[in-house]
Length: 585
Image 1 (cartoon, helix red, strand yellow):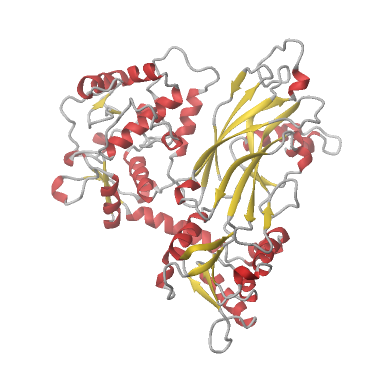
Image 2: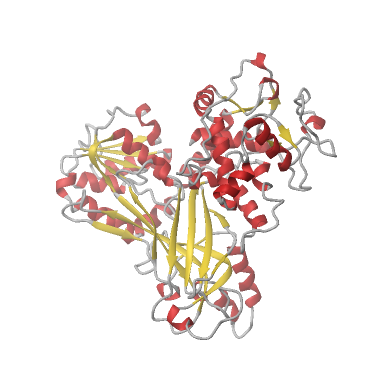
């Protein structure tokens, strides 16, 4: 994952486009690439700027997709349009195919388009292998017929956002390098990882064309985000809010105090201990050693003081079992003496908004793989994401429609339009849901792999059976449950739920608003006369909404990107798909 992030960063910086005039900068004219030499046979466009379509298999550049694909056919025996036609690949599948081919070539692997398993049919290939790959956004320009309901221009912008990296452009220096500089060119992922360790990364190109970026700047950016992140937890207010959340705190308390067979005599590690409340519960439950890991220097001192005040700290004066390590869990060995796979119970309150915001789960999984004994317990051990559709009552529209007798609905509409681009964290009441809940994604924290944190899942939303009329679905609500199951908590399993159907928590729910509300009604209400109007409008409601949701760690450290695609299905099976929306949290 780190190698991929660095690759994207380099690519983003190599292809530096102006947002103001939407034209490509000419590096050969502005002095940045004074010794850049065009390869023989490369073509230039009419303005003399660099050709911007790179071959799938070699370093040749072309000014159009048609010339590029002709070159691929003649020189490499790869007929892109022929493959699309033979395999009946739609736009999405073709987009994935390009990214698959580029990834295979980068790793010096064979490209087998005749594989019946369609190896490129994996959601990871929806993310551009190269962020500024012009081919991805132009390969279908010449097609006369577009897939019905597909806003390709909007989709292109959304797919581009999936790989955008938040890097200070002015902080990154670019220069051309030659083979005598002693910099290793990247020809495979393993090369990239090795070069990252040395600090310098070079991608895509021959010696005379290589472009270089200092990979240490990526680490600097991550460290800055980490400092801000851990620093934010130095505020006592946020800890008061979390501890005051009874649903949260009591679920952990019950899991730790009411399962004596699990905790008694155990070695416990608490990742991200904060005030140390969970570590105190573990010590109270009879653990033989409690390792409280906290990256915030201030909170590590606070947790130490609290442990001493409660006579639980592990020193000669207090004779307790609790020790505090001021460290990120990935660097724990630098702070305390601990043997790999020596922990019996790993506990952490790692969940963020929409479950995965803050990206702390990857640290917990690192701790699991590094420190937890085989068969050891992880608390919680399951996490499940759910989704449901919400109606007008969950928006700000009702408030602004009648403000002391005055109509201010224009404000409400403007706010609603803004929320189509920005996720909202708010408490949603179950009465404002217009569909039943649907399972989106389930994680087994004891067995999942770190890369499974990024996922694509589908769900179908059905209207509430008791509805007697069509309702407008303005978007979807996401929430999660975490389970302390009887796999480890044999005496007292419990569940921590952030559902709209249960008492509210400090996580609330995450709200994603559709660009256009979808009219929805039970199929029993839609039978009879033929309905006119576009599917999903009030004239022609749908009977279900099929969702495709992707959640991935964003290029900005500790943030996540959420993509949302909705397809309405009428009672007669007719479908309408709305453009993909991308949200960053």
